[in-house]
Length: 318
Image (cartoon, rainbow, N blue to C red):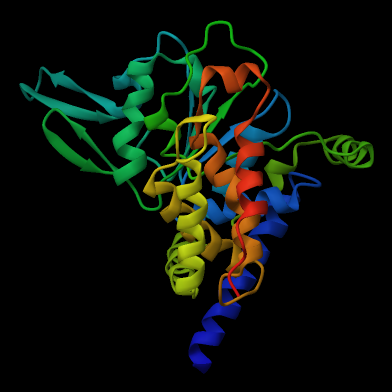
């Protein structure tokens, strides 16, 4: 038990170190950064829906630099092809054979910038990778590096030339949230910090990939009671009963909420999941998976409101 407690303490300290490191680049976003780390350490992926200039690309780069991870960025455009993401076989005339050139997806952290600007055919290139950490190319399964983490972005106010993400794609994102604007004081701090050079240039790795793998293993050891598992399933099941919802959350949402709650509990220095952690993560984990019917959308009802109503209504396990 003493060793177990020490492992939890070390994992919590590692999370704190990562959070502090990311705060050197993104000011005033501590809890949002911890949500991102919760998704990262629990094997999920994140969709950031935010206006331009709020630091989405900077965040992805900072995370990669902080843990010695290989980083790739793909600018999604209407003419982007699946082979641009996955890779392609090229004929070598000297060897009289084909050689496979890996695409940008073969990395640890992938920034899918403005993912909704690519066609559904190109978006679907990420489906297998995000669900199974592998890609099937030319009848051959190729494993992706571990860890593999996708940070996708989309602009919530610009819809010209975009393609809505299909339900299957949205369901593969563990969380969807926004960074948002910082306070005026924090924005002044950003101006001061970037007066001479960008903080990213001074950023050094604070943990290794081996430490990151240990962190992901430790997250799985965080205890969660049977009562809280039933609580999670009850929240997700309620989304399938709502009259405003055409398509409720899948069992993948229940699994993701449990894993993310384990990670966030460890980030908060706990060895077990509490109901408060589950309630906090319910909206970022579940809301984007709900497909509202047309009448509800036109009435101004949002998925976040519906999930919040469910959380408020369901009794908390004692």
